[in-house]
Image 1 (cartoon, rainbow over the protein chains, first blue to last red):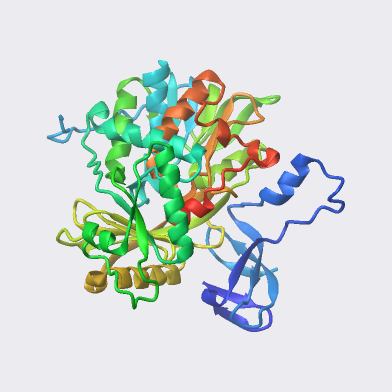
Image 2 (tube, rainbow over the protein chains, first blue to last red):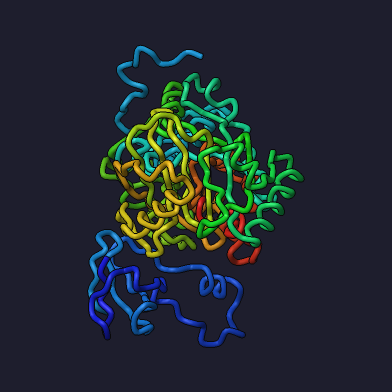
Length: 80
Length: 404
């Protein structure tokens, strides 16, 4: 799989590490949330069959994090 | 044992779906078929349909590496996997089908001090749970499995290993067919090419499923769809802490018998056995990214084969004939989710991740109990969906590593 690093261009997947869903937001007020909300933040992630917005880091290159949209059924990647 | 020989024309009927059932199971993989079998056998429930989007046992049941063992670290895991292994030990006779269950031993290699400590601890934990387990020195590893390279100048030398002699392999397709045949004979409808498109809800209670072959009413609906669990759950507004990943495996050409047991090595990410027919069957680590594509990246296979060739120099001239991937459903604690859901009469069995095959009879047994009684089986109580809120996780990552 070729992954388009926004700074280095398309590179082999082995140069990258996967960061999972880009749609996980730290609770605005973590002290205030109940257990169920906290559980959702810690353990529940989108797992779509289709387009997934996700993070990668170019570990063997520029070491920067970025976001792409990848189709989990085809592995086609489009920039976020 | 009576083998189905000469092979019969069919092992099950292909019925048209009826308009309603007591129980509808979604997914005719190993777990779905075993669940249907035990619903009929243990609970007298035969008004059951198993719906399958594709063909019977064509998903992960067709794609796994058939390893069977029960040497898990935590009590909860040991209990359910050992229950499963005890069922395996009599299953062939019970189902009257020789599915080549072979307790040839599962060797788990340790390549570092950390792994040696973990392995010894797990051997002790297993014994306390009544599960057979031994710790082997490198020389004992070599004596048990002569083709393993225990040379100290390997990149990751073998420093010892765990051995579960009662572990082994079975022919995966035959296992599915054996369950399917018996379930069908007891009256269960196995319905292939029947894809669920939605759920029929009455408030917070499920009362049927919409399929490409019409509405099928059901008093109880049991999800059993492995890698596609979240896709199904989303249709009914249920969130699951599950991520779907490719898990790759491969086979060599048919070879003379060279490997007498299952060998797993978490540190170098390979596990291997030799099927009865003669091919070497190898599994790798999961691909890191989420995917439903039933294929993974070549570098995972490359790393796996590099490790295999160092551990087993005799494999270096074997050829890779096929590689493939299954879509495994992984929970944050690498343990299954089995039980009730917030939606009445809707049950869930998923999260077996990379290790569901070995659990096939055990999971079917406890899931059938859970469905029949509307309450968890004692063995599956710890595996409730609520554990992610209460924090009572069953963290098998350390014990299971990659080769679950």
